[in-house]
Amino acid sequence: MVTIIHETDIKAPAEKIWHILWNGDTYRKWANCFSEGSYYESDWQVGGKTLFLDSAGKNGMLSTIETLNAPFEVVFKHLGFLKDGEEVFNTKEVAEWSGAQEKYILTEFPGYTKLTAKTQTMQEYEDYMKNAFHQAFEKIKELAEAQ
Image 1 (cartoon, rainbow, N blue to C red):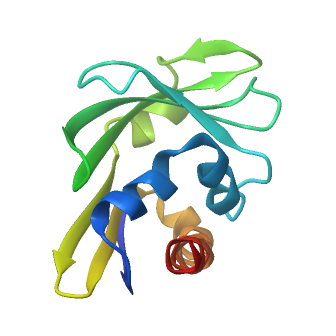
Image 2 (image 1 turned 180 degrees about the vertical axis):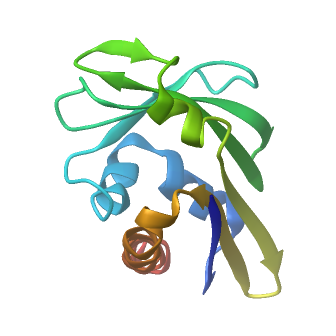
């Protein structure tokens, strides 16, 4: 498992960036950088259920929120995946990355907010994730600074 850290400074308050990150419509715009048409469903409860889904809603990651301090931090813990609409937890593949975290941290400074993502991923996905986060953060910055 490797940890990827991606940061960018955005000329917008944390609350506005948080809205862009987690509002359904704007989430889809930046999440397209990872998987076209992807979206998420969450109860937004610590220990609750969050699904990161493909465009058909049949495949994706099954996660929980480990820490939530809106609009400054959310930590997702990945637990399993959804395959053809079925929850999968107890496989060798899941065991390799189960427990991986994905953290989003917003730190306000005078005139801008630093957005940081710290993501644990399998080494074979490192380059893909670095590239996708770079593109996603450019889109988030564009949306936050344009609105």
